[in-house]
Image (tube, rainbow, N blue to C red; front, side, top):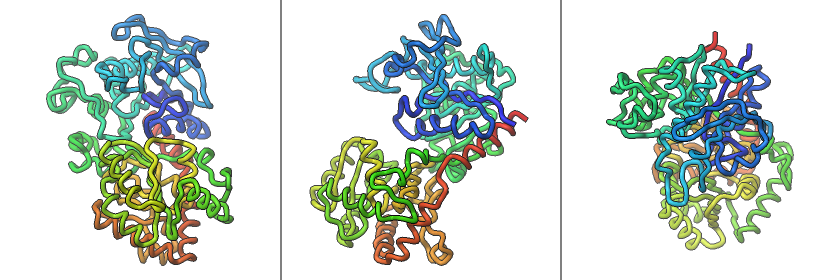
Length: 474
C-alpha cells in the first residue's frame, strides 16, 4: 500500500544524538522505503545544524512562532529526508538540544511545543508537494503534536506517539495552558491535567490514534506502577491501541565483517585478534572472559550493582572495561574498581564512538543490568559481534536475548545470559554462569554463533511500522 509519514523528533542520527532515540529516528526512513512508505523527519534547526542547511529551500513559514518567525527548510543528510524548523529565537543557542552551559533551557516547554505545533500544521495542511497520511511523534519533545491535531483539526491525518523512555515526560506548570495553545475545557485528570500541571507526553497518550513503545515487553510493563512512572493508568486505559515494536540497529554501520580485524560467525579468528588488541590498548591481562559496559552510568542502567559483583567475577578470571559517563558517584565507583584491580579492570569516562566499536569487536561479553530498558541497542550490538549479552529480564532485553537455561541450551537456542530480579545476588549468579560457559569452548562457540545469527536489523521492525500505518489509514 504505502503512503507518507511525517516523523517529528528532537534528535536524529547523524545530525544530533544524546541517546537511542536519535538512532531510531535516523534509521526509520531508509528502513521503511522498501515497504512503500515515504517518511520525512522534522527536526529543530539547532545552532550546529544551521550552516549545512543555509542553502536549503524554504517550504513553510510562520510569522509568529512563540515570539519570533519560524520557517521550515527541506533537504537531505546521509540519505535522511529532513525538514528543519529554523527558529533562531528558540534553537540557535549554545549547548545541546535541551540544555546550555548553565543548565536546562528554562523555556523547553515552549521550544518543543513550537516543534509540535509546526508538525501538526504541516500534517494538517501539507506542503506544496507533499502531505502526510500519518504524523509519527517521538517522546515528550513531540508530545503536543498529536494533541494539536486533536484540538485544532487533523486534516484527515492519523497520529502515532512512540514512547522511547517514559522517565522523561515533558512537564509544564498549569498556568501555561493557554500559552501552549491547549484548551482549558480539557484540563482535567482524564485528559491534559497531570499532577496539577501539564505533561506533553500525557497529552500525546490521551490524544494520539495509536501508542507504540520500542519493545513488546516494555508495552506490557508500562501498564504496571513499577514501570509506568505515574502514567500506567493512562496507558492501560488505552490498552487496545498500545503495541510494542522492537528497534533495530544499523547492520551496515555495526558489521564485524567490515572491521579491522574482520570476522564473522563462520571465521572467528579476527575476534581473537581484536581481543588481543583491546587488552594491549588498556594494559589488561585477562585469563577468562573479557566483559564490557558501554552505558550511561546511572541507577536505571544498574551500574550501582557492579561494585558488588565484579570482585568475584575478577576472582573467577574475568576482566572488565567500562565506557560511559553519568552520575558523578558512579563514575567515581567505576574508577575505584579500576584502581582496585589494575590489569583486570579499565575505565574510560566519556563516550568514544570508535572505541565503542573496538570494544564490541574484542570483548567476550557485554553487561546490561538495567532496572528498566524500553528496548536497548547495546545488547543488539553484542549479539551482532558475538559478544554475549548478560542482561536483566526487563523490556527489550527480555525480548531480544535468549538466556542460557537447561531448556535453551538443550535446544541449541541460547544467545546470552539473563537474570531476574535486578539485584546483586541474581547479577552475581549470572556472571558465575558466564564464567562456567566460558570454560566450555564448544558450548561458548555455539552461543556466539547463535548470537551472531540472531536478526537485529530493521527489516522486521520496519514491516511492523508499515502494517501499523496501513491499519491506521485503512
